[in-house]
Each structure stands twice: as structure tokens, then as C-alpha cells.
Image (tube, rainbow, N blue to C red; front, side, top):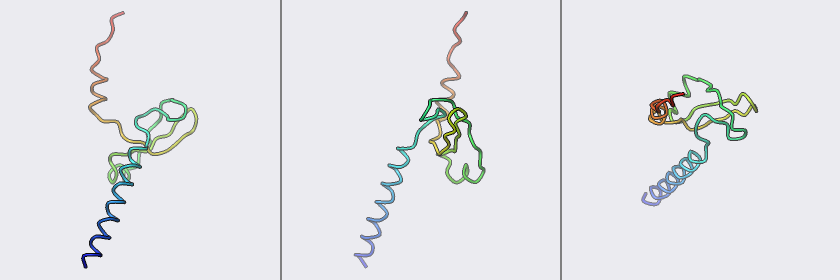
Length: 87
């Protein structure tokens, strides 16, 4: 019985390590990893609820589509609070 528990634990650790590495390899933000253009979000209620840390995006310029990591809301708020430069 102990052997089964140890083997299951090693399999679970491998799955966790692979999941973390794949997550860290995904591009982050709303800019295309290929051309640098701004991407459009593709909304899917099921995907947004099940995996809230990821989102699907499509690049209008080069046509790349894929899954990216979501940008944190705090960084959006910080960017919105920048003072405007008087002209």
C-alpha cells in the first residue's frame, strides 16, 4: 500500500511541475508575441469560469490566436492613474 501512495505522489508532483512550467511559458498580456500588435479577447463563458487565470486572444494584424495569461487588474488600474501630461 505504501508503494502505491508513493507512486501516486510522484505522479501528482510531476503533473504539478509540468502545469506550472506550461503556465509560465505562456505569453502574458494583450500584445501579440509574434508581431507586437494589440490582440482582441475572445470571450467564452465556460473557459472564463473554469480557468480564470488564462484567456484566449486573437491578433488582428498577423492572425495569431492562442491562450495567454491574464493581466492583473492592479496593473491596469496603475496604468489608468498616470497623470496626463499638460500640452
